[in-house]
Image 1 (cartoon, rainbow over the protein chains, first blue to last red):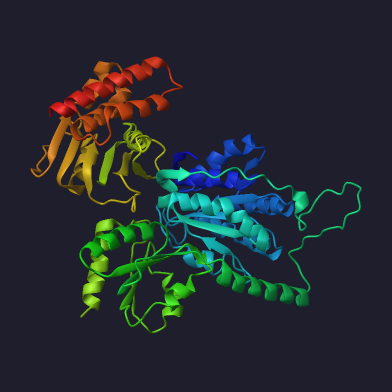
Image 2: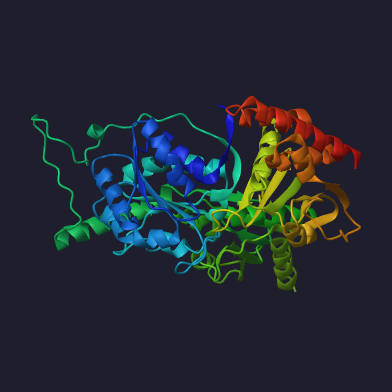
Length: 357
Length: 180
């Protein structure tokens, strides 16, 4: 299949359509506006529905409704808008409904800035809403990865009957690069989904009822089941790139755009003889625990966590696995200030030279 | 060989389009390219900047602080981005709008009266095509034929006169780029 030169946000939108998405509701916010803009004309082409909601809250609840009807539904936003959608996302999780939520992240907290940042890591991985549920979080670093992960996001969401999040920084949302677009999936009919609400057409069929409200004992049972689901993710669904780890004395940890900037620095440091490698989580949840836990700590002298977030957030998840076996250094920018290749190279080198004393 | 380019100027000068078109031409010619725009809250006007990376191999990082080639379409962007050009790099500037003198002696300077040429061609909006022409003439980052092909695709739905004017603008730019 021919490759297309596409913008990140549009690549996600097209991949969603090809992945079977037939309903989108959202409210404008920079830096993700190309997603709704693209879907506003693209979804009607394939018989889908696009709605620009009157608010983020309305939009996520429309997604909730579409998902209840068995439709592959999506919403997208950026940090402040995702916060507004928190209640709806929790309801989706509570009702065990699949949907895809895209966060093209920008600086925070509050209204923050419209420039790229990775400061929504905690929100995405720890508490996307109230009630102690989790969602799978995919963090692409290239547009091809963004396409592939979005394309398959509903497979996970429907398998688990749980929302899925694509967390991508505004930088990757804005760039253009080559992507190969996959074939269009046949949009599943709601009828094949045993959990979806449907019309009763006179035939014998069990009534289906969706509820976000449960008697206590049943809710406890559902939450126990959720816990088991999260354990299964950790066993089966981790995606990670391990780069030049064999002889690495320093291991960079980075995801999304930070990983690409870091990789450029690592290649340069390798040429100078520094033994640096990288662990790049592709799923932030489930977190690639084993990659960090199983490093050879007789060889690894330090972990360097690089994020577009100050203070660094992924560091907490890394620390749980590294324990006290190696120091964890952090480097990053925040608030919408971008990392650059030169400063990142210098920062890593400084840490190595200081740490090697 | 990896090359990073910064295109800069005022909003409306076609700086972002110039970046996309150059990246697209490289991709159409079988190379890898990334395009990264700098975005802001402006609805129109303001400053415009984008970074393009072109390579034979897949591009690791689309971000580049220092560039090999800098295109500046106005005074403000010239002042802001000139320090980001690498030693030995190529500086292309619109001499109709960049008024201060170039003080760097470690770079190759290609000064083009972009606005004059665009007006001469009959399309004041074609300034970005003129400077891309100069870029092609001076550096060969993409070939003139490759760019023209890419340009034809972009303007396929527009009136043929527009493409004709663009082709002339490109040719004039290439000639100047080669001669300087």
